[in-house]
Image (cartoon, rainbow over all chains, first blue to last red):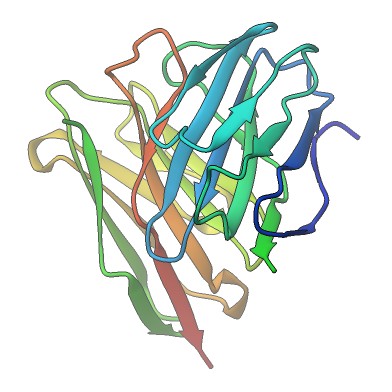
Length: 114
Length: 116
């Protein structure tokens, strides 16, 4: 089955701790995206990557970091600099990097602060 | 700046009634437009997409949307609501500031409640 997997489903972070959210796709898609979802605010873009070893900041990149060492993987690290990390995080991918490409979403990871 | 506005954060309909979810966009040129559905604690699923050509777009689960350039709208409709349609719906537009990427701008979402 082709698709996008995110793990874990729930993640708890202690203050001052960095945590990493996993996103893997076996769709052979070039582009990958990370979004943050808060109630009533829609989806906001954190980072995106159009090709291996390259990524760009989105609208709310502060306090987050990513890597794209393999085509199928795009992990997101929530650093201690992100003061309000509690949210639902969604990873997406699209076949190519052009305008109008459909994005396909994973099931999400809910991050909670202890 | 480009934006997407979904009118009504909550819409409630009776089972069997018409569903109408409103989406307006701001853009100087016709963009690509999308509707996604999200069930609780899940990712987003594509309902339908407008690129070019026919302005009435049919999607999955009986939904359709009409692109109206003069009104800068892309409202989502379904003739008869089912209980299983209860979910959150997002309208999105391609980000024309980044013409060589697939970036999207999302609306704030509309929660659809279906009453028996």
